[in-house]
Structure formats: C-alpha cells, structure tokens
Length: 256
Ligand code: ADP
Ligand code: 5GP
Image (cartoon, rainbow, N blue to C red; front, side):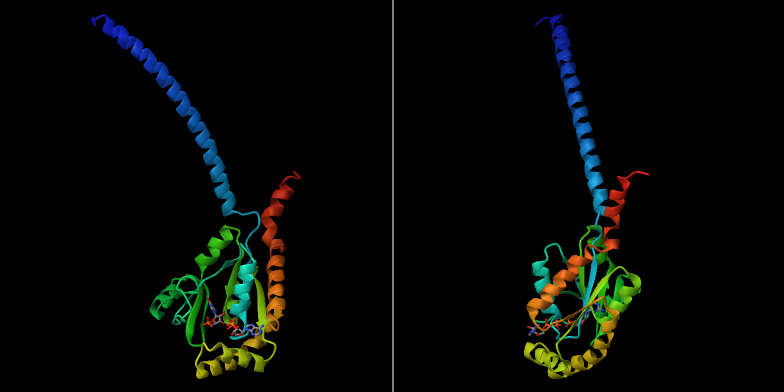
C-alpha cells in the first residue's frame, strides 16, 4: 500500500464513516424525538396519576368491638377489587393471627408518641388503653392513585377525620342487640373476660355516636350486611366531590 493510497483509503473510509455517522445521527435524533414524545406521554400519564379524574373515596367504618366489623371488612375487601385498606399504627401487642404491616404496624408507645408529635397522623386515639392512629401517608398514596380506601377506626378517630376530611363517607355498624354482642365477644375467644367486660362497657358509650355517621348497617345476617356495605362503597364513587376532576374534563369539551 502506497502512501498516496492510504489517504484515499482514509478518505473513502472517512466518507463511509461520515455517512455512517450521519445515518447514526439521524437514527439517534429520531430515537430522541420518539423517546421525548414517549417521555411526554409518560409524564402526562404521571400527571394524570397525580390528579386522577375520579378521586378515591375515604370510607370510615366504626363499630363496638364484637359487632362483626373485621368479619365484614374482610368480606367487603374480597368482594371489592381496587378497594384499599388503611393499615393503622398501634401500640397494642399483635394477636396470634396478626401480621405486622398487614393488620397493623405494631410500634412501641415511644415511636407512636413521636409520630403523633411530628403530626404524622390524620387522627389517633386511645382505645381500650392502647394507642391507635391513621398515618397521613396511607391516605395520600391512595388519593393520588384515585383509589378508594377503608379506615377501620373508633368513634373518636371518626370525629377527627370528619373535621379534617369532611368529604369522607362513614358507616356505623350495630350488632342486633347487646346480648348478641356479648355472645359474639365471648365466642370469639380472643380476649380475656375482664377485657370483654371493658369492651362491653365501652360499647354502651360508643353506640350513642351512631347519629354522627352517614350510614348505619345492622350486622344481623352477614350476607345482607356485606351487601349493604358494598352498595355504600359503590355509591361513594358517584358522589359529586369524588367526580370533580372528571366533570371538569367534560365541561372543558363544551368550550367557553
Ligand atoms: P369486630 O371486628 O367488630 O370486633 P369480629 O368480626 O371479630 O368483630 O366478629 C366478632 C365475632 O362475631 C366473630 O367470632 C365473628 O365470627 C362473629 N360474627 C360476625 N358477624 C356475625 C354475624 N352476622 N352473625 C353471627 N356471628 C357473627
Ligand atoms: P382491635 O384492637 O380490636 O384491633 O381494635 C380496637 C379498636 O381500635 C377498634 O374499634 C378499631 O376500629 C380501633 N382502631 C383500629 N385502628 C385505629 C386507628 O387507626 N385509629 C383509631 N382511632 N381507632 C382505631
């Protein structure tokens, strides 16, 4: 190979290279444009996720202990895909069947009180001598995702939620009678006799709060009570405040 040929070769090579580079540049440019438009789409989706068309409902359920609230909530959750459950924090010790992070976040009194001081709870209360609270972050995540979320909290917690989140929907569950409540608590075999007595005494005070709730469900027959709860959750999705985002979009299409 001569010294003259080399530049030619280089020249040809550089032409090939430059045309190759050009094509690569076009390809990269096109990819960037495609990528950018995908990113725009993704960011729009992300924005939409932040402001969902239909805002998730907050549904509070309260009942005196033993009325069947946990049983009903389990059935309701199983029958309502997409319905979230707000896992509370508590200082109570876990029961044999309970799992940390699923039933409650079990924390020490020190941790709970620190969270309360920092304002991390939407509401919290002392129930039967233990502290229970709903963390803001549980509700915020659900609302951002447009997901309905269920809060299983006591009457004091409900009063705080009502004040801070007036759009929440609330349901009070009543047992068919006091003797039946007593029977259910005893037959459940989950609490000591003195604890059962304490819960029954508290029940007498708690039932006076039924008037503060939007809906009342008597848990006589499990099937009927579950159906009533399902109807309430469904109806909550159609409440005006839940649909404000969606309506704004529709109204926007009317112009003006
Ligand atoms: P809560 O969560 O309100 O304390 P549970 O869901 O643990 O109450 O129910 C208390 C007991 O009553 C449980 O043993 C449950 O199986 C029973 N129970 C719940 N609902 C009914 C019902 N409609 N009829 C008869 N027993 C019921
Ligand atoms: P348990 O110890 O039987 O699971 O619950 C006792 C009571 O505490 C129930 O009435 C339940 O609704 C209530 N509770 C559970 N979590 C919370 C919470 O986050 N806040 C309040 N205020 N009450 C709660």
